[in-house]
Length: 264
Image 1 (cartoon, rainbow, N blue to C red):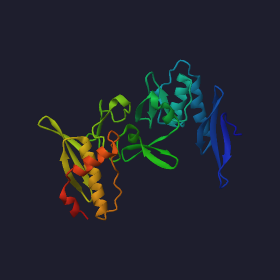
Image 2 (tube, rainbow, N blue to C red; image 1 turned 90 degrees about the horizontal axis):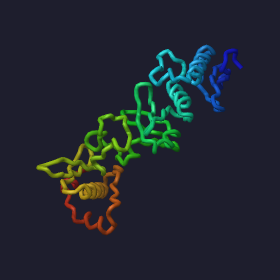
Image 3 (tube, rainbow, N blue to C red; image 1 turned 90 degrees about the vertical axis):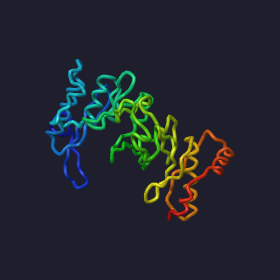
Image 4 (tube, rainbow, N blue to C red; image 1 turned 120 degrees about the vertical axis):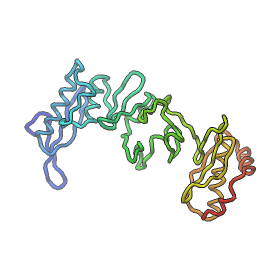
């Protein structure tokens, strides 16, 4: 054991020594991270100890400092444990009707309590503006949990009602386009649904009076391109509201652009 409180020595595979900090609170052993030296590890321990000993709540979510040795996610985990009596391995802070997930000190994601179990056991990551989680070796965009299709565009396919792109509460998410390859626009007071498929640029399949017709037209266009030898794996639309014979009837009767046969 290292000479500083809450600090333990450990060895890397190459034999080098590093230092681990940890503490126990309410019979819960909590790892605070690994450090290159005992001083930093002890500072992280002391910061963590101040949080859990702060019964008056003077240390808040806004108290985190740039010089802190305690990682921000651990800082949030400890604050929630102190204030709400529950320890999560992910940086979650519980509020009355929802919870906050701290992606970092500047980015706070809001979720309904119904999603608590999922995000308590899944770490959120961000890449290219998209939020995703890893599960069983695969990566999944968070948007998919809300019925939003891959490659959906904000403002065209879905919007956040309050314009906060990090507010993922169900009441705040409005899906505009429910199907792949479908865009909606208002013309003369009515909705027009345009089906579009991508192959070295966007190609208009047709314009339709219903969202379902446009979604099926997209499927039909994908089938045509596959028959023409194009191997791109187009995601298909599943129309759960239609029986198989109803779907096939619409599929057969829909008109799609003849120019699809020219796409190679």
